[in-house]
Length: 428
Image (tube, rainbow, N blue to C red; front, top):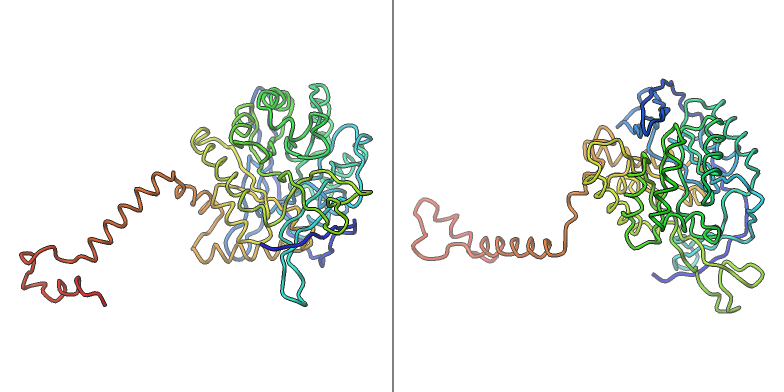
């Protein structure tokens, strides 16, 4: 598709009109895993009109499957509060580490790929690149704000995204301190493709299954709430790290993080975008253009989980270019329980969750689905090998030819079915 690049300067996220959100009741359950009690929260909400969008994931009940993905839409108390008020099923805060002093962002740090539209129309944003780092705010500040959010919204799902270097003490400290803030679960950032790999963090850790296994072991021995491992697509076989994380005790995986990319070169200045003082660096690619890739990765993980972890309470959170209820339905049909939205919020605002919920319910109404579980994973069985597709097509062609041929010889004519037998051999 023809397109052009547009560099974004930093600005406020789009503000949608605020509205009231439902209040939820809460109860707690406990289980044992790896010798440690895992705290689980079950939310109960009043019934809403139309199909039920609530989903229960690792003991956590979300009002709907739409979750704010870790990034700018979850960067501070104000924006996360807005998400809760607008009715998002959950919020994953922007990734934090113990020492934020090492995190220094630049600006501009985003670039957009736009489709070439008709003259006079606003071009559609189809791709989005960022070179943004994890949270540059003090760790103690983020902890205080997460704690405040849980105090004000005790019955909403708040997930902390965390990242650390290859250091067991650091991982144990960050887990202990973040849990004390009252969050419901962890998402472990094993997948950020830029800024941190040189410190053996993010993607660099998620691409090395031996390191991943060891670090997941540290995390799951310490954590007492559910743990999701966020996967990088920048790897040959995404099922390998996903399998490693699940075998090492993680309750779920999230996929995908952004795809390593170079957005493009400005042909007037000959400089790459986004351009910072004349220079750039490869970054993470997101938005609707990555959705087909994300769907393929989610499908592979879901098939692996179905085969290797049957009947276990293991979860899959789908990420990648979700901007509508239809997009969410695709990920759920491939086995996801929740879908995360980050770039979509930056383009459409927090209030867009209402539109996505309405669209998802319309899809469910169309097919007679009452709950998310009615169709979760329903499309997985229709993926097969190319060799099988060839065989299936041969059989189909054989049947069609037989149907078109009609009677094979004069001896097959009968007086009883003469008219119908004649019709089988008519071409028009």
